[in-house]
Amino acid sequence: TTKEQAYWLGFLYADGNIHITKNGIHQFQLGLAVKDELLVNNFIKTVEADLSRKIKIIQHNTTRIAVIIRNETFCKHLMAHGCVPKKSLIIRMPMLNQELYNTFLLGYFDGDGTSVGSHATITCGSKLFLEDIKTKYNIASKIYKLPKTSNCYRLNISRKFLYTLQQEYLHSLPRKRINYKPKSSKYKGVSLHKKTNKWCAYKKMQGKLKYLGIYTTQEEAKDAVDSYIII
Image 1 (cartoon, rainbow, N blue to C red):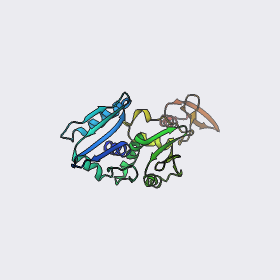
Image 2 (spheres, rainbow, N blue to C red):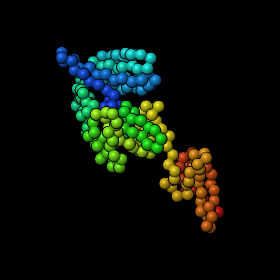
Image 3 (cartoon, one colour):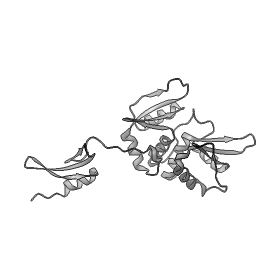
Image 4 (spheres, rainbow, N blue to C red):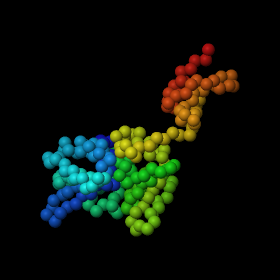
């Protein structure tokens, strides 16, 4: 399993649907917004090479489209990874290689997550799924039941955590990607310049700070500090 596959597994956990008819026909459906056409194309490229039949796309209206796949092997593969029919209330974190969990969670967030203000929120009908996430990542936030619903819960995560997930996989849903700048640097001699949102480099010399310039990233500022030679 690749990071790309793990991302899509997470996304399908959130927004995918498998239905098995009385005649045993396996059908998968994914609903997406028309404005996310780029993501639709990426999904098709990811799965189409492994399918004997072409993928069917239906546009319901001016805002929504559905990607439909009638392929038993494809559906059973998803089911083996926990993406089962009528999954909304029963999903749990799947068994994956350790390095794939962040990308999986990012995929789920892109399907059923929002980012507002200082935090981001993951929603799910399965409280146990959110508890799995909370335990795995040692998240301090409580799981809340959404008002006026009987089967939907939410878990808040920090924007910093979300930004970390997004840096591991750069091809996620563009409209949900965020910019995040920490308020302080992890490097000695580097500080945030609030007006420009860039990083200043300083070197302490004889009890005074010498300004070494302003840089786009912390790493560039750190390099300036490390490479400065006192004459």
